[in-house]
Image 1: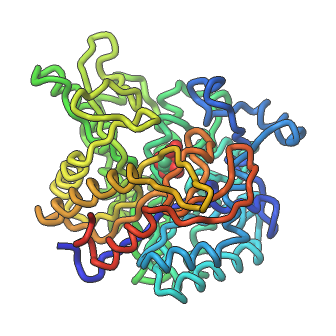
Image 2: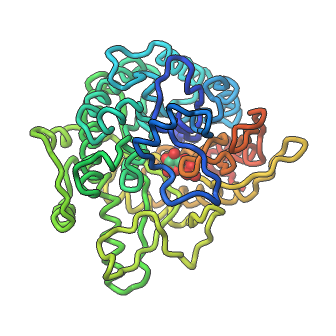
Image 3: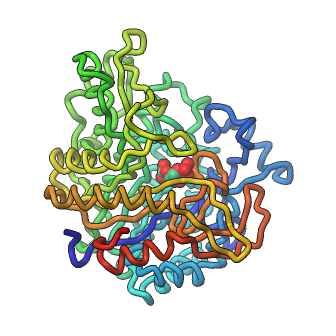
Length: 479
Ligand code: BG6
């Protein structure tokens, strides 16, 4: 069922893993400004910050806890960590390059050689064990300078800087990295423009939706430019898009609910439609008109988007989502806020767990696009307990992953072309949404807490041995 060359492995992001925020000539990233807030004090949108907060946090860092600055210190532990991935039999490791490690301010004339050298070393280390790196160009950590001076991806200056950055790394690593992704979860701009695009809503002159879709458009342009660069540099490079896929279920068979679910699905598919088909889909015209969404499209943009279509699709899959028609919020699209699905259980963080939805998602995607699919993220965030002898019994994680891999196998039997599966956070890393260290996804436990206290030593969990067996049997032995 799984092809001989199926890419089994794990996925990560520099801003959650790497640390070393002030080492090797790296500049400040947007994610360096996100501080940890304990659960009981957390508000709605902990990923958004204001210009004043950025200024204050830069001047008084000692007053804050910034987990994404330290990650799990992969910067200084990468050899040890990659060795552990190799022991599990990884074929692929999805990671991202920290843009400010290459261009500290984003706009610099020349790249930072020390930063470039770091990734050379990491890629060499992966290849030493036959592990294919799959690299995301931008996974949330935009050079802070571009936020402060240009409002991130609201500006075309940032698009140009991104193009230069992409060209630099494609050229440098073309013989070490074959698979690339442009933007991680490009659709998350609707939830957090700061996190996704380094753009502050207070700085825009547009209405909220126009602002978000302007950033989106600029990222489409940037992605198309990157794809074209990659193919021009080396025709063997494969570039994919990455979307947080949220399959929608109607709340009932009432056609109004069915319509609502189709409508909200469109808002999510939109991001793949543009990057795969190379044009704005018909259904967005009405949505833009009725919601007063006005975006600036420069001459040549639409042609460029057409020319820069991606080679494959990648998604993160964590949950599905129930849609109910509500005349008051009709067409608003409720993004991530959930209506409880009575057939599913939720994780400790309230994320509905839906293995069967994984098969449905994959079939729908393939049916719609007929493009190869890479699973860029899937996994369970949970509290783990480490025992005195260094063991972690995480049967709940094994259970979650087993059920999802089972359904992945079914989708492949259905005929869906999936060429790899990278579970999220194969080694515990800092959570993106909450900046917690205690929300763990890994097969490998890292001894660090939410405040950065701990030895940072690594320990193998029960799931480590389980995943090793899954890979060794090419997905046949998942018990
Ligand atoms: C995805 C992101 O949304 O989900 C990752 O691409 C993130 O960066 C992952 O870590 C899991 O979310 P969280 O909030 O549990 O870390």
